[in-house]
Amino acid sequence: MNSEEIKQLTEHSIGQLVESLRQGKSESLVEYLRMAARFHRYSLHNVLLIALQKPNASYVAGFRTWQKLEHFVRKGEKGIWILAPMLKRLVEADSSRREIETKRIVGFRSAYVFDVSQTDGAPLPTSDTVSGDPVVYRCRLLAYAVSQGISVEYSAGIAPARGMSLGGRIQLLPDMTPAEEFATLVHEVAHELLHRGRRRESTTRTVRETEAETVAFVVCSAVQLETASAAEDYIGLYRGDTETLLESLQHVQLAANPILNFLLPSKEERAAASALERPISPGERPGIRRAQPPQSA
Image (cartoon, rainbow, N blue to C red; front, top):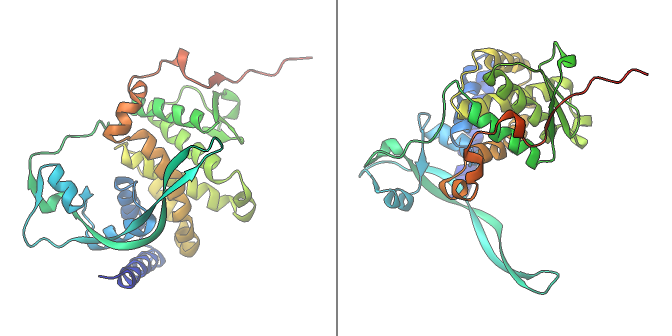
């Protein structure tokens, strides 16, 4: 399959998603978002390609990668075609005239991957995901916010809102359950990442809220946190404007992917960031403070 054929396949996948939404079937979007959660290191187009060719895929890798994992693709299995970046090695000099090697994407080529269900081998190591108990991930998410220059504070004064994005600062309602706080914080971090620049002026409040809620849905799904039906119901409100939602999916990934890459690091990244593996107690949360009431005159 060449690049043009893959492009046509991607457009077909997008067309199917849009048509399903036009018919009021938000389930197609929900399934795509769950796929985006599982493959958060892949681009929008590649997620669409995987979803179209192997809707039940759970973990994909190339032929050689499976061999390194002591898994072997069964004879006769059909590969899942995706677009792989073509990298060019560059050597540049910094301000001190030291040579620094970098890599730049110069194009894309067709490649194929296989799902774990298409292989035989020993059971893969399970990840440290949790279900319904996001305490560890909440600590990592707080650390991610701080790494982006976003401070987080708690204030009862924002009720009935559960969270507020204030541009470089997030306020959360105190005493929420860990699950509620995690989902709310993801929502507000998404606002900080997506809606604090020029794009805020070119989008409506409905678009911004839907994107933030969709980011929260993707991230919560990736860490196996049940979000009841709230996110799905909210996504369903967008049935009348599917084209706008489709344009938003790219922005949703721009926010969700780096959050998930931080929350769910690879083994190599985990070794380099081992300090994040221990829970952070409330007294030592970096950048977290309680909002102080205004002083009377």
